[in-house]
Image (tube, rainbow, N blue to C red; front, side, top):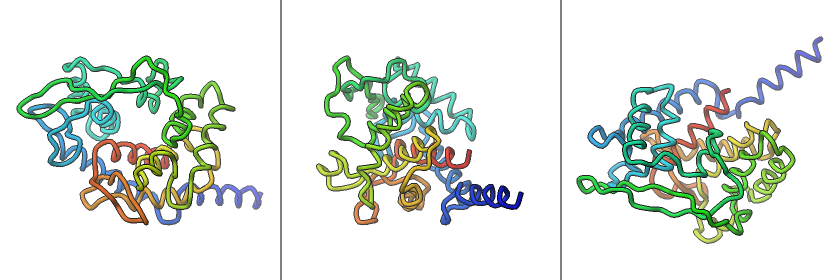
Length: 255
């Protein structure tokens, strides 16, 4: 009996990294949600890409924000969804994997970034997936992790295989994939995707606490998550997409 209780206690302790207790995570989520709500453009009924930006992305940014604000601010979430419909864009084809809403997520296809409208000097843009098959996607940690999420329900073996390929790209600081080798900086959102995929697959992923530590360190003073980092230091600005994915990872950690 004592052994069983000891095992249970150890499991509970391992639920959260040492540097991130429940109260801290809850506060970080609240600050992240405030970052999003403070960006809400009432006349346009959308969020800009980042503070001060004149670009508004329907997918991924506002689609993600509608999901992430559904509990804390259902009124804003409804307005964001209404705006997606108003501009005639109801899907992208890839990011919906996170919520099981992608109709045909695999194989991955190439995408295009396109202009939808210009309203009072503000550019409304979105990402659309084409019909062309994307080659070389296994060179990118984010796509490996999205593939593992897409396969988690029906192709467990393939899901684990793709997750392990992403794990192999971890170099102690971040995911050293083709994009990182090209840009020279690590993408924060890939840390979030790793934690989301780990939660969805229900496996004891290596580097979990290291990844979490990096993710938490990228939260800015205004509550948003900064896009990139190098040598442990933030690079870039906090934006909507990265913040939404970080919040999704923190929610997964608490569940």
